[in-house]
Length: 136
Image (cartoon, rainbow, N blue to C red; front, side, top):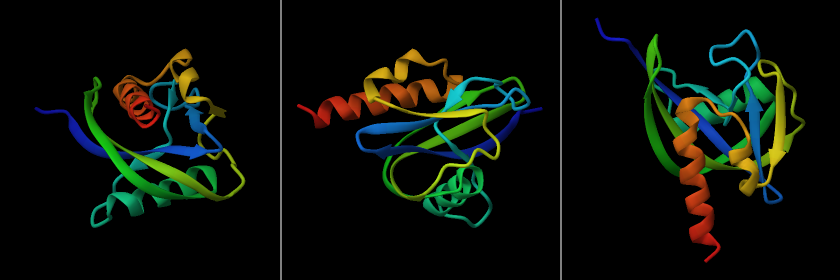
């Protein structure tokens, strides 16, 4: 029997040179680890629509997905996740945590100081490589 497979979108949301990260609550899977916010793709939904909806539902802010970075497949004990990342701009709203424990706006160079969900780790590195290539 194969593990359940799900597609999850996450946003690398940028504002004033900082990146928004969220810490999972103690009651969530991967408790207290950090992640780029997002959620599951619904049937018939586009990736960008999913990301805008999930960010609005979880954080009460509006974003614009810009560049699709990459997708990562990660197998957890109970499921396989295809995690698809987009760099996003912050448009409007005030962050309200409806699911997460904490959030932080961090400098890209500080991202590696956090304890990340395993599926997010390759995305952190991909984002940092993109930042480095844009700054050279």
